[in-house]
Image 1: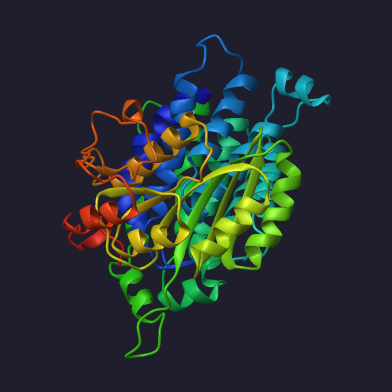
Image 2: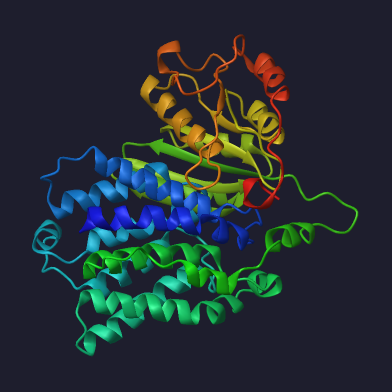
Length: 416
């Protein structure tokens, strides 16, 4: 059933991606929530693909949560990975109860735990967002279960209630209310949970995403971006940094890192799990984030993207935070690879970044140029990538990057 869930969720999120991207205005209007959630769930599916087909439900749930955590993109993806981790830790079932050392709970209880876990990923949670939607779904599912509904019907009732209340929930948030849009993360969560309801019920039909048309707001992200700075002045330079750390004590590092990132940026989300910590932050100076990551004492990699900038289908690798900022300013997905990393960690980070750079319209990935900057061995390069000769240091990477055409800015195909 869990495998069937992701089998239903991926095509649904692919179909919904552009509509969800179009209403993404919070925490910044960068139009990528649908894309980030799709990539995060793909990571969960990839992790499951490597799991023994005979694995029990607990193992599948743990793999699902770990795959999402490692693949988490953006603020929305990091929060979703924590939601899935909470669901995995509280899901009903004999094996889950035994693993936790307690009697198994109900699905509504697991949804409530997942909602609480998602809120814990954010040091300053804001109502009117996906966090509120998650609570509303859990509450309605619990009410339906108490009225005698089975798990599939209870979850379907929760999803229906979330949809019905989405506009009211979103209007409670000042940014969403001003932009006249619903929360993009909430939309994505409802699509994902509707796929789970379909798997529980054994429905034959695909997940319905047509309801998103009711909340369409073409140009909302562009309008919000235009309002982000005073007239005649450019928007404040800012970068999104998403890091994966591999500490000895994930919980302790997550707590300390949450505080450190809060001191240098905003939109902070930090999630520990199974020997890994994934962290997200928006910051004016990527070097400040790199310093906080290094101070954690854990091995780490990070991607750096410029917010509200153009895009190129390019991954540019470097060991310098300053160079990463310069590459991101030119539209690349910059990958920060500190010295001394295991080859596998560097390779995995670049592969995730290549997925980001090459995510075009649903079902039509774009070719990606990777500029290794001397940070990857030849054997770690994917044959599907375009790798120009000579991009062996920051200077030659910068020159090669400038020669790659920018992606035309149109709809969800580029950041506003």
